[in-house]
Image (tube, rainbow over all chains, first blue to last red; front, side):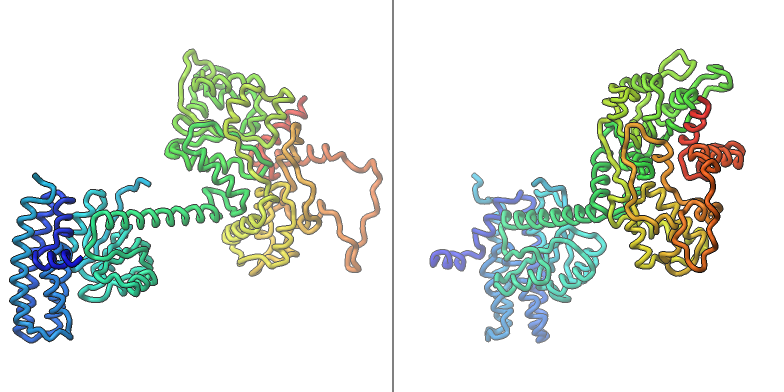
Length: 124
Length: 496
């Protein structure tokens, strides 16, 4: 279990979730999910940053909530983790720093997912 | 259980989540739509009527629980599966309380999602089936029939079961029990419904004309055949031929009918070539058909050809509360026709209706209610308005299917008189009640020789009806409340 957790946070994506999607779905479907995820990330990251800039706490948490949901769907665990911190009103983390971290984790998740799309588990 | 393609609505405001669910379900072949807000879910739930809804709980406008409440309140019966990121027991309990059939925690594997969805759809299909079966068991209308009794439910089920087949149906039942309605229902429930339903009363047609009526004739085939005329068999091509009172068919005609039933071909009277048609035959009699075979009046080979699916109609006395159901229906109809105010029966009147044995079955009940609607008025039919026969007796001896029926007894049960004849006929026909102080003194008893025999009274009565209608047998029969065949038979017997 410890190794699992460590691996989850070492990698941007959870191979159990993303790998299962990549292996169970036709490549076209998996790629369509990645594109949708990419669109979501761009849109939600912008909403998050705009909310930070204007001090809109509700907007900030709504965007973080959607980011967490999108990230969880494809197994982007590190991104989901950051988004859930942003969702939590009791967490003292700096919203600006979290917004930057969201961008970084989103980029990392997309890169790993793209690699997975090219070489899904079980492929030669 | 194999399932047909279903309509599945995904309610999810995060496009990635929705796309994952859609992709995981793609193999199942269901039609899938997406709603991104609670309001959109309500609109599509009502307008599109999905079979299943995958409901996210966190929606931008209101919660998934609220959406479920509103959908259920609007009568949407889709199987709702709650999709949540929180796998807590509280969420599960609340989901079920709001009408969800299951819940699933995100992220979900393909197998988990598909199995959950298919189980929910299967459960919903079974629930729908159960509702349909319950509705069938409780139905009180079936084509032309009115009746919710268990005996009639069995009749409805038999008709439905046999309708799709081409198998010949043989209907038995007392006079007035609805044999023609049953034949009509068999036709209308069948794939032949768009084609003709031709009914022929074998007992009402003079034996010399029966062959021509069934098979038609060519011009010049016999005196009076001035033009070629198709018979019932040709007219019913593709549809259903109903041969009522088949037991009255002469033996020589039965031979010809047998050939037709066996081959589907027939030869019109006077024609040189046979014709072929596709006809389903429904026969009916108020006699016991096997007893008729044993008595030598009905061919055994024809019996086996026609008696493929027997359908026995119960007498009205065995149909429980159907009497009142039918009586109310007739009362509504006749009150409208007669411009009367009747809206129902008093309890005492209903008890009298329910306690009577109705030997003439629904036809007799129909005449009784028409009689009331014509002669009386008021909000409710009272016991005193009922025809005296109903008040005199309850559960009088009733006719049974018999090998040698008395045609009058079978076809002309104690029918209520038609409106115009009612008062006089009722007064003279009904035995007098015990004299009351207000009653006029009785006539002195007549000498035995002053009485006519019943047969003579009947003959005079029928001939008078024929005279009154210009020898129009169907009209006279309608006036007397009997089938035309009864009059034909009587005329025949008086000639012999």
